[in-house]
Length: 227
Image (cartoon, rainbow, N blue to C red; front, side, top):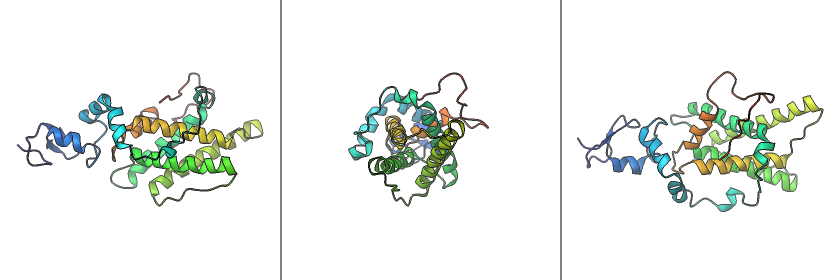
């Protein structure tokens, strides 16, 4: 039997993305490029374990270095000092990714989340540096939804602080740092391929679907996420 994709080489493995058998070369070349690989595919999981850094270096080579915000310094203590903020933003990303499944047939990819984080971080950078509120324009509906979820989470965090403390102590500069922290985490985890969902799967693992996902502040034990 020949490969269901190239119709030339002999089939070697079952591909759940095409519901047929394909050759190893097509699997390696088209995985998360033209194929919407399900997260449970054993060959996808194996490839993530083997060479995440190798794939990322080539796939993200065209990413503007400024998009990584190298001027934003994040101390080792920052994730622990702002654990609830980072958990809240991470939950907002996971929630957006789950809701995004219904936007079209494919669901959200790592690139959707990373592009939204870059856009939001640029907006907060402008706010921090010039006190001007500037929303980065995007026609991507998925990225707009991600931005709305994150902005809603930040607003609710400030409202909760004001309710308990009488004022809000969350600074825009801290939100910026948290966004850049998650951005760098996303780039570190994704393969960089167009349809990669390694970062999305990581978020889903951190926040499984359940009635109550985020632990309350008083819950003992840390759930901090380190890239």
